[in-house]
Image (cartoon, rainbow, N blue to C red; front, side, top):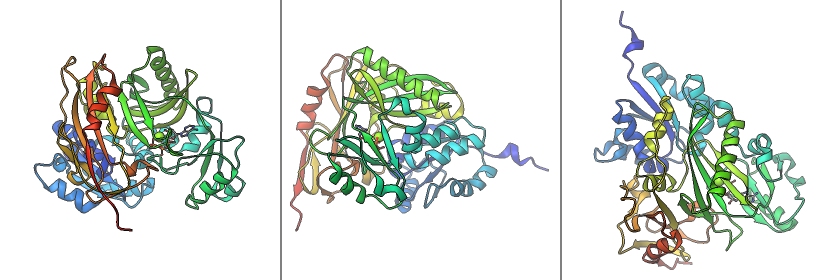
Length: 433
Ligand SMILES: Nc1ncnc2c1ncn2[C@@H]1O[C@H](COP(=O)(O)OP(=O)(O)OP(=O)(O)O)[C@@H](O)[C@H]1O
Ligand SMILES: [Mg+2]
């Protein structure tokens, strides 16, 4: 009798959504390039017909995907039910989570299959902001959580404070409030089943720390400076990232030390993490930690800064291989451009072609520059479609175009990036009222 076990093709399961697959298409091509079968799970935000069209287009990087399942929710039991035949038909060698919603089931699945991964516990804590505050209390701000049935009792010890839902992403629902009345108004805007955090407002510049962790050991860390629209609004929408941050090494060392201590406290196993901190009087205060790839163009920034794409290192970690990822020799910046309200009709620039990443289903494949090459605009991307409505930024989904610039180590990231931001022309039409 034929031994089924030995004839199963080796495969890697990637849990994601179309937006993240479009960005991280190198994960798919890298997996396929190793002779492994890329199998993909996506959630309800993915338009399956669109993803299928990309997979069927042989010129598209996502065409290497060998199987795809779309699930209505990321519930652990549903995910497991949907992969049961993959687990029998394939020799699953790795599980990768690229996107926030599948962090919990991906962590549980890799653990159940005996594969490298964050660990079910670490994944679960990372997915839930209340659990993070409980487990990592010493690292974060003071906080109170209010379950749905107790929302009427929500108060704050002081103002201004920050109110946010426990399980969302894209800074959605995160808002600064100045008094009781604003707190009540903010609470009324959440879904009835959401648990809400009310937190001390932490001031100071914000950073993310990306880490590659191999069997509990941090093998690479990078510090990215983050800017939001908090200076001009009550919101905290990300509008820029600089990798690596141009800060004294004492600051980046403090951030990396805090992040490493947090990963230890979580007993984090293997994978990439993305944590956000503010530096308050030089002390890192944890905003949140995610057990997945960073969002926006941060992986592209590290590619441009180090000269190497990071996706192969992430596939290595999923397969239990210690990755080699270099230290940066340049700096790279993503900056979103400002817009006025209206309908976005076109985006142009003399500096670069504009990629409409939502329509293309893939991000431009950038290549890195020599370390001492002058600043250049590597990419201009628009996540929205032509005709999208632009308004005030409440969360990441409202942003229009962004530029990605890479520059020599000594150059000033702000002024070098400004040159390219200023060259972007948005054509915006007034909306019919
Ligand atoms: N207690 C706080 N004090 C100061 N700023 C805060 C606080 N909590 C959240 N923020 C700001 O709001 C941002 C978004 O909060 P958080 O990261 O919890 O939400 P999110 O939806 O996961 O965001 P994203 O997906 O954009 O990372 C933080 O990065 C930070 O700028
Ligand atoms: Mg965040």
